[in-house]
Structure formats: structure tokens, C-alpha cells
Image (tube, rainbow, N blue to C red; front, top):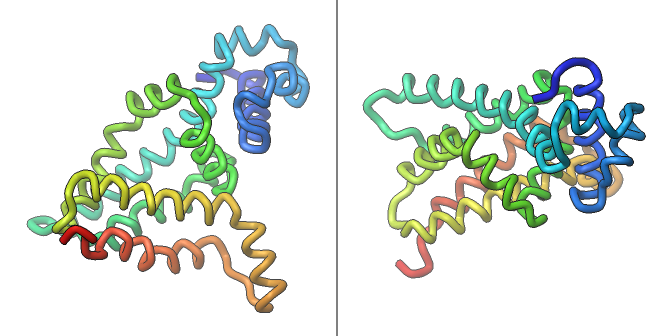
Length: 214
């Protein structure tokens, strides 16, 4: 974890550059150049590029998962004795996501671009880091989603969950561009919260649709 102002400057620059260029395409010299620190500072604060990548995700997902756990705990208390609906669980995720920028200083669009990289660029060390540190929250949330639907095999659920994640990551990582197109073509605007609210029924439908094998 970063310590002090220099570490935070490195973390901030790395988050911006990784989201814009990717992990392999971003050198430590480019990061330290933006952060206006020397190369040795990366080794001092983070140890290596791999550990810096992990620290970027921890700085975002740590606050997000803490808020998501809190949202889920409230939901479980409100639905004691019953199973939450898909929509209720997705609202928990949406609420936590909307609160994350205020806690991290990182916008939702950049967060989603970084998550996209975690899926599309080969970084096995990052996957292990995310599972070890945030797997419990992920399992808690996905477990509630799986319990809220019936008739899906574990493999069906796995793919449905990834269809949902793909839709969310694409839409939110492209949010500003899609918003500009909407404004240009339809003369309308949609705030981030409005977009998330409108996505929930569609995302829920992905999970609740009957299995093609049924």
C-alpha cells in the first residue's frame, strides 16, 4: 500500500496511464514522468510494476468492496427469512459503485477501464491478488444472485454473470462517448445514476431468462 504523498502521486499516475494505455504498454518511466518522481521511488513504495498494478486495484476495490459489503448486509437484514431478488442485489452493486468515486478520487469510467484490462490482459498475478483480497465479497454477491434464480446450471450461471459484467464494463467504460452520442443524435442527456438505474432491469433479465437447455 502506498505511503505518503510520493506514493499517492505514483498511484494516481499509474491508474490514469494503465486505464489509457494498458499494463504492458505503460512503462515505469512514463508513470514516474507523469508523477514527477524518480524511478527509485516506485521500488521504494511498491517494490515492482506487478505490485504497483495490484496497488492500483486495491486502492479502488478496497473502498468499493467495503461499501458493497455494507449494502449487502443492509439488504440481508431487510429481507431476513427470504431471498433477495436479482434487482435488489444489483441495486446494492449500483449504490456502492456510485459512492466509490467520492472515496477514491477515481471516476466510474476509469474504474471500468481498469476492470476491463484485468479481464483482457494476461496478468495472472493480478487475478490471484483480486481473488485473495476481494474474492469473499465477490462470492457473497454472486451467491445471492445465484440463489435468486432457478433452473440454471453452475456453468449457465457463470456465463450469464460474465454477460452481465461485459455489458456493465462496456457501457460504463464508454459512458462519456455514449452520452455524447445520445446528446448529438437524440438531443437528450443521461446522468450516470440514470444509466445505472436503466441497466438494472436489462441485467436482471440476462440472469432470469430461461435456460436454452431447459
